[in-house]
Length: 222
Ligand SMILES: *Cc1c(COP(=O)(O)O)cnc(C)c1O
Image (spheres, rainbow, N blue to C red):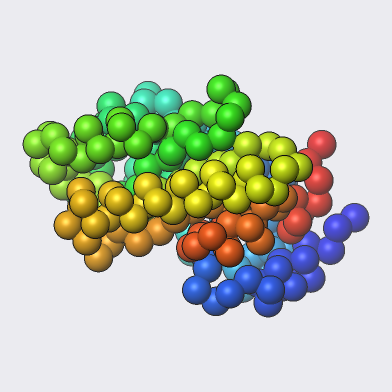
């Protein structure tokens, strides 16, 4: 049995204080999540809406939930009332629906734009061209109930560290270009969510501000 409390404590000691840790708790039980929470950790990530909703009710209200998995447009309304950040916005259509649902209830939702940087075809996400096209549109500028806080990406699942590093470097460049050329250096656009259990050290070296880590904290998923 992994010692969840000591795992998360030592991970937090190792990560620079400027980098936020999202404890990715998908597939983990309420009890396992509480073990991490009881160390004082507040930010957790889930990738499926149903699973998030069913666990959330049994957990403390001050948890900041991040959605890190593909979000279907018909599920947006279930998470908008409480979600702290949607890290996996992968289409303009989805962003507009988040905006519409958030305006209805008077919230502003922090969002990250998910980029497709990996070689695998199955991973969701925007290309840089799609994002710049979106950022230049007047429709985009009219969205008032979403706050675009930065970008997110997953590197290729590979043991080739240089491949991973170059993908993270590319993500960082996209972030910089967007911030300076397209978003007028918006103060709120400041996050680069990159790095998981296998590659967070490389991600931090390449400028990550948010790492999303599951296995190191909770043990391998079955
Ligand atoms: C599962 C998942 C993680 C965490 O993966 P680990 O390898 O267990 O750290 C991070 N990000 C996303 C988007 C995930 O789906």
